[in-house]
Amino acid sequence: MVILGVDCSSKQSSVCIMKDDRVIYTAVQATNTTHSQNFLPMIQGALTVCSLTPKDVDLYAVTLGPGSFTGLRIGLAAIKGMASANNTACIGVSSLKALAKAVDLDGIVIPVFDARRRQVYGCVMDGDNVICDDFCRDVSVLEKYMDTEKNVYFVGDGKTLCYNTYKGYSNVKPNSIELPCIAQGACLLAKAEYELNGAKTHFDLSPSYLRLSQAEREMKEKMEAQQ
Image 1 (cartoon, helix red, strand yellow):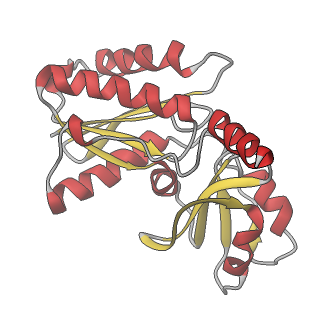
Image 2 (tube, helix red, strand yellow; image 1 turned 180 degrees about the vertical axis):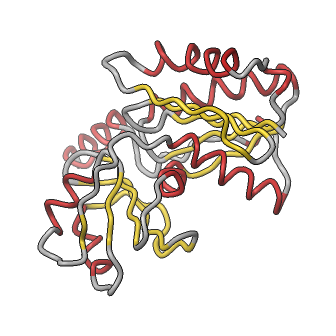
């Protein structure tokens, strides 16, 4: 079985290919180029290196969010198009849980993306156990999860903000993981979901934003001010 996993939810794009339960290719792109510039070439490059074509893919794994609104749309549009061409099965997964799955840390793992205004997209994981599901809140909401005997690790592009906020706790540990392959985590989660519940189609894929876009927030604030 060939699984192609992709992610555009954060500042970097990533691609992973699994074949017969083994990761055979990973790539992470973190440059000044945009997802729209590098994402499709990354997928084509991954398939070429592995001597595969889209027809060889049995399952697409794609992150649904939360994260970059534009990045999520690009990733989903690409996978929907590729999947519809060959009627390939798809599974969408949380980008945060895929990030947690992509790192190897023993303790409480808190994947976080910077959502600006001292807010983060995050969740709290203890191995495969979800302690707190995906949210978009002020970084202060994480304080209650520091009260544990286990080591706590922040990962993702919001990790510096969170670490600087909670580094006073002795169990909050720094880590050197800068560019985890979120797509690899997506493949692993999708494989587990496929074995448990089967797959879905590209029609079932939709983004999970968790909050309004900037334009929608500004409009809401303007209307509230006028009232």
